[in-house]
Structure formats: structure tokens, C-alpha cells
Length: 587
Image 1 (tube, one colour):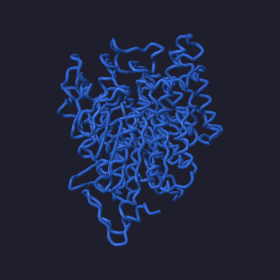
Image 2: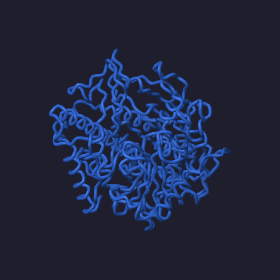
Image 3: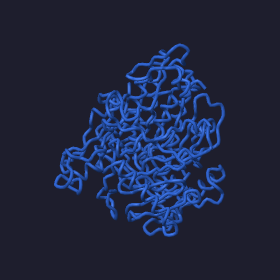
Image 4: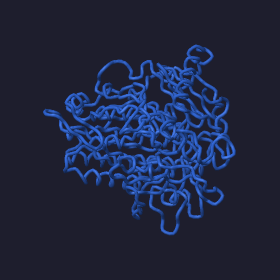
């Protein structure tokens, strides 16, 4: 196929500094594939039909049928660290999001050691890699592609331009501000319509009645503040914008990179009434029944072996009541939350279908590399934007403008089926996400790929598909953080039989929770309230549900993985957070 790396590089094309030139007989730049990167926000592993869900997602299911599922794909455990790794191709501790900007800023502002102003760090002396934004030492996917002759567009959530601020919390300010040098247009996007922060209302503010979620929904178009139309709904508007950007230059024949960074289904849970109505009564049987059905579908689809031992989760755990112990009022509220969540996912699928159909209409689909995934596992936390007098969380208004709810731990477990825990934890439920890839020109679907893959791998994969050389440790005369992800292109093309990470280490840390994986073994620590940060060891080849801790039985494997983790943490520049306990930083 004409878009392979060798077909471009072997012809002597000069790529870089915004110029593309090729020698006689070379493949013209327009023949390189377009790239469409679709990212959902807080979507769990089992939330689309192709991964076992009861939610209607026909467009994503069709994409899966014509492409390929990656069933062992991993992310960061929360959104901005994942997005930093997506853009830079390296560990988030190097790229500026060693922890979320909101976390570091709050620690500094409150004087918490070792970040507080009276201790080791303050706002002016944050450790390298903890700046809170995509730092200037890191590569940017959009810049690399734009410099190589691609149009670059994005719409949706950015979450990579926050930096700590001394604004006093007591005065109602936030402990962070936005950094224009890290806005999308400064990082290589030709056109962008973005929500700067990590969350906000999905609807436009109700005139005269702003909620805190409305105030946090800060939008820019390129580098200018954007005013939201009264009929704004995040998923629909982002799709409209991206289609318009793609159409704006389609006549010039240059390939495009389009990044659809949707904010659905991130809280606050909100969806159009018509979408919510489709799910009325769908979840009245409760968490346990829906989770069991998803697990059975995953086995029937062949995503899991018939004897897979799913993590039992919080079923029966004190303080986490079973469905049948809830009152009728509580069940109605809980069911409504999941109805809205499902509506958000179906609406997301419909808009993704619009985007794909548009590519077909303009003749771009066949030469487009399409990737769909989520930024982390499902969101189980109860935290949400603070309420004010304008919030209406009555049962009848949940999911509509002015509402401000999450769906909580038990529904997050359903989204994470069959894994343990959810977003913000280093367990499989926190860092496993659905992944669909369709190669340019792919005529038929392929069987699922179970290689251990990671969000860092997407940048080198895109570069390989586009025939753009890896810049290494220097770009445009400046030292940069090298790409540490691995290209998946050969494996996606069906070449080779070995897992892409055979013999290699994959590790990460966030909020003190850690994991390290090598050759099927995973050692993981879980921070409070579900753990004390001590290591546990699992054989993912037979126990990806993380149900049997083998650390006492396999001390040699545990010792080797501990060394692997410490070596990685030292290279990545991990700083131990005060939120964690029980272990000092790596030496």
C-alpha cells in the first residue's frame, strides 16, 4: 500500500520545517493517509457494543467490524496525563503532567510538603515534568504532522495548558491559570475549537443562571475566546467544527490530521432529552444484573475466555450497597444517572457516524487511518463541580441543563467490566480502554489484537504511517524528550508473531498508584481508600481481572519487577506525591 513508511522514505522526500519535497518517481504527499484520532472522555472498557455493552453504538460497531479491536490497550489513569502522552509520545512525567495540574496547584497553594511554598517547591520551582501543561521540551503530534505537510485540526477537550497560580482559594479563584504558549494553536494545530479545562457543562449556560460547571467550560477558537451558541451541545458542536475545518482546505489535496477530542461521557452527565428518553427503564434491574450481562456478552464475543474470572468489585462491600438494598427513590435516581450516561454514549456514537460518513462523502475515507479510544477507564469518583443556587438535580432534571451529577462507583464498575476499579487507579479498570483501529484501504475486518499496547504508541504509529522520521532527541535545533512509545504499524498490518512489547517494560504512576508490566506479569499498588500502596502481583495471562495476588508465591518475579519499576521511575523523573503513602520516591 502506498502509504507505508518505506514507500515514502526510500524516495528521498525531504520532510520538516513545514516543507515537503520529493525526488523523481516518489509518492506525492497527498497520497499519504489522512489521520482521524477520536478520543472519548472517561468511557469505560465495556461501554460500546463491540466490547459487550447494551448501549446502542452501531457506528463504532461498524468501524470495529471493518477494522480491528485492540483488547489489551492501556492509557494513563486520568485524562490530562493521557493526553500529554498522546501528543508527545513519551511518559507524562517528562511531558509536563507528572500529576494533574489541578492536583499540583492545590498542593502548592495549601503548603503541602514537598510542594508547598514553605517546603521544597513553590509555584516558581516546580520539579521538571510537573509544570501542569504540555511543556516546551516535548514533541507535539500536531506540530510534527503540520511541519511534514499535513493540515492539522482539532475540536474538543485540550486540558494541556494549565499552570499553577497563586490565586487564593478562599477568594473563589482557582489555583491554576491558562498558558497561551501551550494552547493548541501554539502546539501545531492549524485550526482548533477547544474546551481548555478538564470538564464543564455540555450545554450552553442557561441565561442568567450559570452553574459552576458552566463557569469552568472555557472555550477557545484558535487563540480567541469563543461564545457558545444557545443550542450548543458539546458532542454535536465539536463534530460540526471538525467537519467544517476538514472542508476548509479539502481542495488543495494535502492530507489532514483531525483530532476529535470529545468531552462525552465525562461528568456532569448531560444529554439531549430525546437521547435520554430512549433509555427509560433500561437500567431498572441495577448494577449487578447489567454487569453480569456485559460479562456474558464479552465472553460470547470472544473478547474473554469462557473461564475468565472477572473481578468481583464492590459487590457486598460495606458502605457500597447492593441494588436490592436501595430504596425505591434511590433506585430511581441511580437508574436515571445511567440512562443519561448511556444517552451520552449513543449521542457520541451518532456524531462519530456523522464524521465518518462525511469522510466517505468527500472521498477521504478510504485513505484515512482511523483510531477510536478513550482517555482512561470509567469515572467512579463522587466528586463533581460544587453546587450553587442555580443547580437543579431533581430526578426530573438529571441530565438536562442546570443538572450536575456523576454516576458513581457502582455504575463505573459496570463500565469497567470485567476489571478492577476505575479512573485514577493503576488497576486494569483504571488504565484499560476500548480501542478500534482501521487502516487506510482496509477492505475487511481483522481478528482482535491482544498485544500490550499504550497511548504513547500512537504518535510513533502515526509517524510511521505518514512516512515521517522519528526526530529522536533533537527537533528543529532544540533538545526534546525522545519518543518512548513503540510503532504498532507492522503489527496492525499483520506482520510478525511476537507481541510488540515482548521482553519490554511498561510502567506508570499517578497519585501514588503505580504499576509495572513485563511479559504478562503485572505488579500494581493501589492508593487509599482501596489500598495502602503496597505491591500486589498478578499474572495477566490468566488473571487480568486481578483477583489472585501472587506476590508471596513469586518473590523473584516481584523483585525483578520492582527493579524494573524503580529504573523506569528514575528515568521518567517521578516525584512521590504526599497523597501517597508507604513508599519513598525511586532512588
